[in-house]
Image (cartoon, rainbow over all chains, first blue to last red; front, side, top):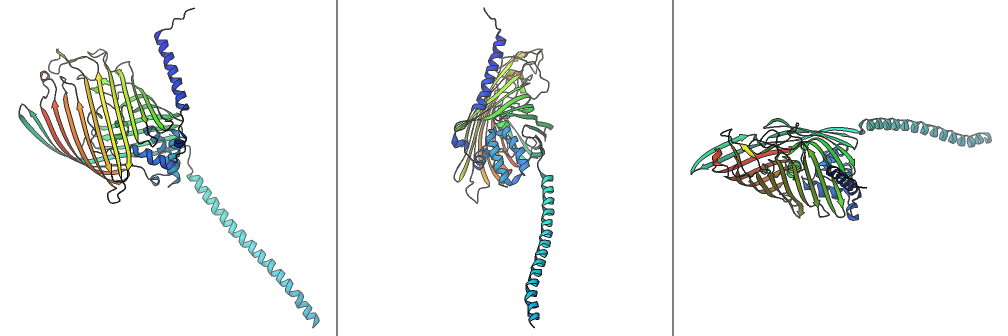
Length: 94
Length: 408
C-alpha cells in the first residue's frame, strides 16, 4: 500500500519533529557541576557587564529586582537558574 | 519575754514570706505589662510587614534619556568644487531621546514591556510586547519588539550602554523593530552556554528607491519574515559571545515592479568583556550583509523610465573600550574607539562607500549615568548613478559630541 504525502505535509512533519527536538534540547541541557555550583555573586559579576556596568544591589528594592531580573533574562538570554541566583544575591545584599 | 521572742521568731519568716509573695506578685504584674507592650509592638510590625509584602503582580517604571550637544563641519566635493557647512546643535536631534519604560510582572510567568520614546521623529515606540516564561529556558513573546538580528540594536544601542555618542552606521540603519511572535532563551551546555532567539514577523518592506523600511502593523504582502540568532558563549565565565543571525522574507509589495522580491540578511557578532587587572576590556563587533533580490525601479527623474542595480549592502564595526576599574583615581573614566564601514549599492540613488573613526572619553557618574565626549571623522565616496542625478562626489565631516545619558 502506497501513501502519497504532499511536500507541504512533509514540511509540517519536519517542523513538528524539529520543534519536539528543540523542546527536548531546551529541557535536556545541563550545566557542568562547576557551573551549576556558581554562586549568585559570581554570576552577577560575570553576566551583567557583558552589556552594561555591574549594578549595585542597593539600587532597587527586592520586589523591583524580581521584575528587573525577568526583564534582563529576556535581554541577555540568561538561563533561568542564572536569573534566580543573581536576583537572590541582589535581594539579599542590599 | 519568751512570748515576745517567740512572736519575733515567727514574725520574721512570715514577713519574709509575705514580702517574697508581694515581690513575686509585683514581678508578675511588671512582666505582664512588658509582654503586652511587646505583643502590641509585634502586632503593629506584623501589620506593617503585611502591608508591604509583595503581591503576585508588580508594576514599575524605568527608562532612559540622552541629551547632548553636537558641533559638525561637513565638506562636500564635486568635480573639484567644495562646499562647506557647519552645524552647532543643542540637543543633538539625531541622538536625543527620552524613553520611559513600563514593566508589569504577573507572578513569575508574564512580563509586559512598553517603551514609548520621544525623539527627533516625534513620539514613537521602541517596545510594546508581552513575554510568557513558558519553560525554564523558553520565553514566548508577542507584540512589537526589537528583532534578533545581530546584537547591537537589542543590547548595545541604549544611550546609557553605548560607549560612544553615535550608533555605527549601517548596523543601526537596518529596521530593528517589527510586529510578530518570538521564542528565545538561554541554555547551559556543560561548561559553555548558548542562546537562541527566533522571530516570525510581518517583515521589512522594499521602498521605491531600493531601501528597506520596517515595523509596519499592516503587512505589505502575505509572506512573513523569519529572523533568528544563535549565540554561543564558549568560556565558562561568559566573557565571550559569538553570534550568527539571519533574516529571510519577501519584501516586495504586490502590484508593484518589486512584487516578488525577497531579501536575505546575515549578521555575525562578537562580544568580549573581561578584566585584566586593573583594566576592564570591552570589545564588540558586528558584520551585516544585506542581499535584496533583483528588481527594476522607477526612475526618480522620469516615471516612464526604469533602472536596476545590484542591491547589496555590507556594514561592519569594531569597537574597543578600556576602563581602569582597578585604579582608584581613574576608575570612573573610560576610553573608547570604533571603526565603522558601510557600503551601499553602486548605481543606485544612495550608493556610497563610507568609513568613520570615532574616539571618545567617558566619565561614569554612577553605574548607569555617563558624560561622554566623542569625536567622529567620517568620509564617503559616492557610487551613486550619475544618470539618476544623484550626488556623485566625496563627503568629509568631523563632529564633536558632548552627551549625557542616564538610565532610571
